[in-house]
Image (tube, rainbow, N blue to C red; front, side, top):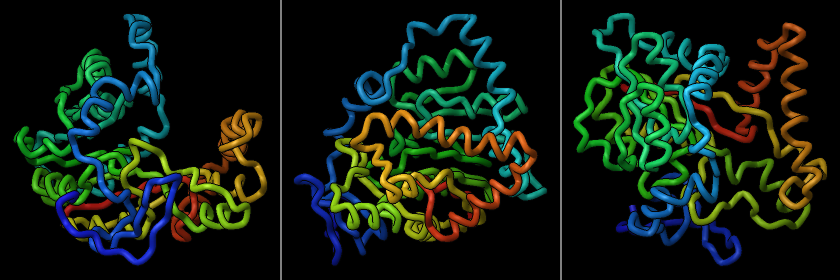
Length: 310
C-alpha cells in the first residue's frame, strides 16, 4: 500500500501528521504510510510494555485456573460464538478451524477450543504469544501480513479485533484471509469508529485537536461504510453490524475525557452502570437493539462487523 499513489480530496493535520481520506484505498489513513520495518520492533517488544502494559510474570497456575473459569462465563465470547454458528452454512466438513489475528492477550480462541474447534492464533508479540500458549491454543508468532506463508486453509472463522487500524496494508491482509477461508466462512472485524460524525462535531464545536489520532500505532481510520466497502472489495459480504457505547456523546456533552483526568476516571463506571441497568432488569435485548440502531447511523465508539466469504 505504501508503494502506490494515494488520491484524496479531504485531509487533516494532526499535530504534524497528515491524515487523508484516501479515494484509492477507500478508507482514511496516515500519509505517508510507515514501512513495516518502522513498526516491527514496536510491536514485537514494546506494545505490551508501554502502550498496554501487562504483568506476564504474575501468570501462574492459579491465574490460569481463574481465567479459564472466567472464559466459560464470558457473555461477549458466547455472543460471538453463537453468531458465527448461526451464520455458517449448515453443510460444513470438520475440522472446524478458527484463527484469531493479532489478539494480544484476548482468549476468544480458548472459548472456541473448549467447543471442539481447532483454535489458532497469529500474535507477533513474544510475551503475548507465550501467554496464549499457556491456554492450549496453537500460536504462530508472526505478523498479520505473513498469513499466506503459514499455509492455513479452510478456516471457518477468522477474528480480527482492533488490528486493521495498526497494519500497513489492510486490503492485502483481507485478500490473504479470503484465500485461506472455507466457502461461506465467517469473518468478524472490530475497529475504532474514527472521524465519525460525532467525533468531528465535537472537534468542530469545541475547536479541539483530533485526539483520536493515535501515533505511532494507528495507521488507518475506519467507519462503518469504509469497512463494509473494504470487505466487499476483498470478496466478503457484510451480514451484521453493531457498536458499543457512543463515547462521542460524552464529548459532545462537555465531558472531555481526553483532557480531564476526573472525567476519564468516570467513563468506565458510567458505561458499566448504564449497561448493567439494562442487564439486571432483563432488558439486554433492548440494549442490543439500541447498539444495532446506532451502528446503522454510523455512531458508536467502535465498529463490530460480521461478514461471510462470497
